[in-house]
Image (cartoon, rainbow, N blue to C red):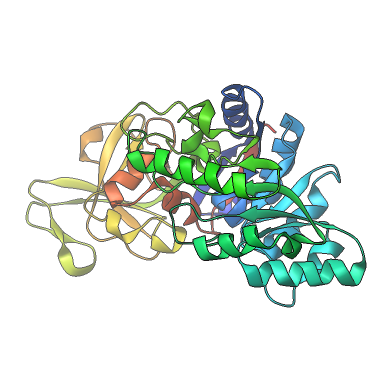
Length: 369
């Protein structure tokens, strides 16, 4: 970031790479023998995969997961060749050779994907690595029950395939007591028994906290690395990773009865001081946070009033009294004491959406790593 970027930008986003690495180490420490990967899809949940992944590599991570092949191609050059980059969606039809060119490992989710990968292995006359995903209860990605039957009944379909792992994905792991977790575990074990012996990967961030039965050989944390609470209803053990500060554009005093913002959804009930802050839904501050969100200044919580605009929010700063807040002051939108899960709760969503909605207009800076 240039020296002038913070001066020119309407908001500042600070990303703590050291905290991300500490979160990875904390998750790894919960494992008896399994390896700990890092899910860096969606640009590392909006925080910058090209900065996050190398920092995690230096912390000891060697396995990285993305969703799309174009994400993997961009990521591969910034990682050491001894790291593995896996593509969760597998190869799009016709894109299989790109995986070989860029040293990427596909997650094969269907018999057509498997057939295309097998055909490429035959043309190259060498085994090609892959992860096989089985669906154990999400009906989203992975070999369905009939496809698993077909694969188990005809092992020749794996000719030319070097299975690195068999994997599946938990649907309700953040709800630790939900019986669906144990049901998926039993289905996963049954699937493993029907496929060639290889290593297995099952647990996501929340699944790590279900215990050793769910860890197998490789766990795949994503959101927890970035500070999102992995388990519902208990204190969040993860370090916060971001601080988002919005710049005050203008302040004004309004009288009781004055409506503010688009559609006049909030009206002052007392003489109030209002600050206009340069963050809006174009920056990922969700429109649903209007009249529901809170920000902070000098540790004082302040309500967002009126509708969220594309480029601005309005904040009632009356509670600050004589505290100085003027044009150019920075208000904390997210950070210590106001985590992404808190914001998500106000917005009626999840921390994942808050992170991945962060816009590209912030002046970004990175700490540590």
